[in-house]
Length: 189
Image (tube, rainbow, N blue to C red; front, side):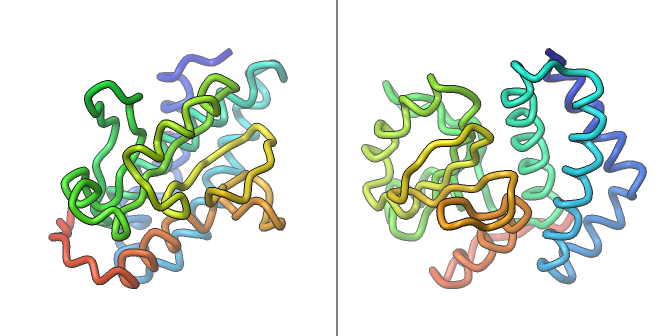
C-alpha cells in the first residue's frame, strides 16, 4: 500500500501539472468548475495509484486521496471548514462545514463530512448523530460499497440512486451554505 505521504505526493504533482493557481482562480470565480477539476485530478491520480497499489489496499488508498483532495478544494474554493476535529469522547470528525461552533449552535446549518476508509470507519457513523442530530447533514465519502439512504453518500462512480458523485461535493457544499444563509468570512489565498 502507498503511504499517505506518497498518495499526497501523487495528488500534488497532478495539481501542479494542471496549475494550482489556475484551479484556485477558476473555482473562486465559478464554483461549478470544481466538478471538472475534481474529476480530472481523481482520474489521473487513480491511474497512477493503480500502478502502485494492489487491489486489497486500493480502497483505503483512494480514501486518503479523496480526503487530501477535499481539503485542497475546500481551501482553494475558500469555503469555510474545520478539519480533523476531536470532540470530547467522540471520534475525530474529518470535516465540519462551516465550523464546530456553528455545528454546536445551529446543527441544521452545519455539515459533518466523514471519509469511510474501511469497515471500522463505517461502525462509527452512528456516533456522529450525537453531534449532528439532522442525519441528512451527515455526508459520507466512501469507496467501499454500503447501502444507506439515511446519510448523503458520495462515491467514485457517477450518480446512482444511492451515491452522489464525489466530483460534485464542492458545488453541493457551496449550495448548502447558500441555502442556509452562511455568512462566514472567506479568505482569498
